[in-house]
Image (cartoon, rainbow, N blue to C red; front, side, top):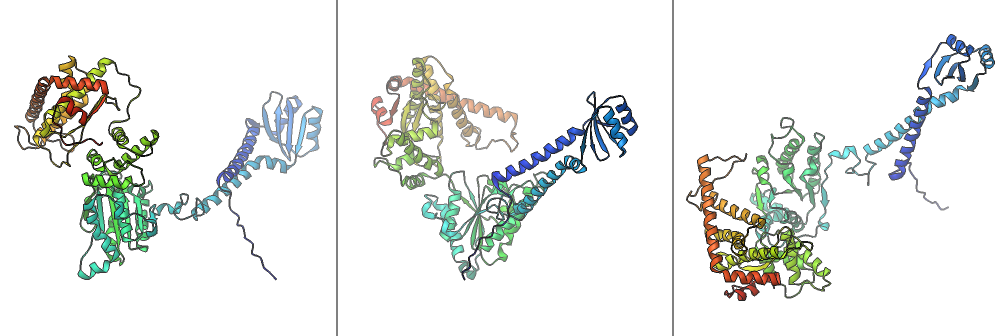
Length: 615
């Protein structure tokens, strides 16, 4: 005899839209029954039996509805009343003699009218209670797991995502540049692979690492690469995921996170944006005992408890605000190793560009070294975006490969904004813009030893700028001389001075140039000791107040004004003495709109510097 197994189906409450519709229907019917029950007896006046008989004798009663000894009536004027009558046939005779319409209900029908709403409401509450208890047991939500969003008891569970070694594809080969950071992290990898090697010699490897760097520089990627190199589980969570409005939830999530990590040790915990939970204590609400501070206290306790566990758990945190972190987080034994992840330098930028260029069809004429040189201050994420924007531009032009022009457009779009197609400049505006940009460029060309090489000049509007003068650095700069800073001021003022000389007019277009010139002059006087005031730093305190005297403040203003006035006069001398070159460059810009350095040098009869065009 052959047996067949049948799948037993368990009664479950309807889910999704069906469950919602059922709940709405039950509630609507309950409310409707309650409404009719209330509406029927609204404004009803209770009268005595004798008064009721008088009203009948006076022919004022229109209709009555009787249920047992309870009587509900309506008078001729529409008002309602209730009374209790004696169970005698004489009452019915009187009502019949005065032509009163009578409706007789059984007690059960009246019971239904009054208690239907109560019954349906009770059913609705039972259904909701069933759903609530099911949620408490972890049966609700998707998956019904302890971390499900509908499980109230899972509120204290960690929201961290766990990646097994097989799921982590990153390694140090996936991280271009950041050589110093990778060198600092190799100790952690060795420790995770073979902790006994360190224990035998008596060495204690740090268990907490703090990655510091601006957004987009690869802190998360480095943490995943460490897990990939060490071939161990990786738990990742944001600092804000610990915090809830309910007191104690954050601390519970911290405990749960570390318990999970220890169960899978050796493992790595990565906390992104740790400043969300690790800020200085004593500045929160509730007298310094708010939820965030309790979460931080629990985190400190868990980090101290590392040593009592045999298998290692490494915690890596990332932030771009190390100044706001609580000092207890940074003491030895917790985050006692700080790894800086700075903006990539020239060599690193070239490596990052080559890494992200894989899989993108790029012309052999594109020199990644020149593109890297033209993108100082770009983060790793920005360089990836540059490759992507160039590829998008090439596809829009129906090109098969990405060429230099696409990279030019992508970089200008990122730095300055998209070229405007709606701005229509008058000939006078174009002339002023051409002389303005020619003034910027000519000043730098006349001071080649203290200036970066010219790249291009354009009067095509981009973003908020009507024109742009761009130059490329010859090398990565870590210091700037006083002469280089002064040349930057001269170049910034060159646009306004050119307007004064050639157009006999001044415009508002020099506003951003003045901001740049004033900022450089302020730093030279107040921070760099490049003025008669000497090597003293004049800066504001944490509350935006100056700590120096009013007299010193006046001297600072005077020195900045003297510096800018001298720069203005020297800029004017340069442009007046080279007026023919200024006119040639402005006229060429009016004709071509965009000119590169390789065109400008022969036009002005200036000896070319090293080729700095991307082409």
